[in-house]
Image (cartoon, rainbow, N blue to C red; front, side, top):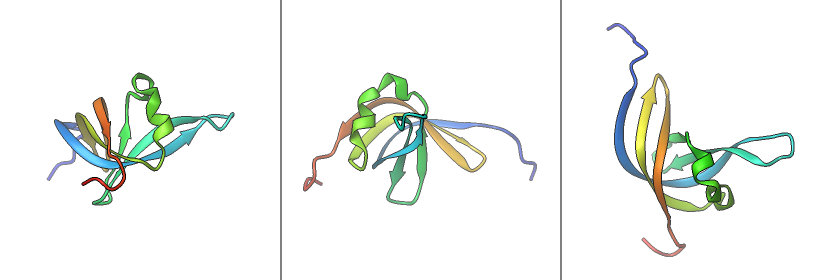
Length: 89
């Protein structure tokens, strides 16, 4: 099977934990990952459109957007997110 740089994209809602992944020289968060229960880590592509995500570190939420898969990494172009309150399922 020939390996190509094909990107697989699809719209999806995922549930996961907000995890800071990058910081600038003032230790401000500049990158966010969504850590899912099945050990997937999905990078948020458009964090600048959702600056409040930076305040949600270690909180769980539902994220909806277009997920792109490329080689062994995944990212999401976020359209919306809904925080999940502790104790709710």
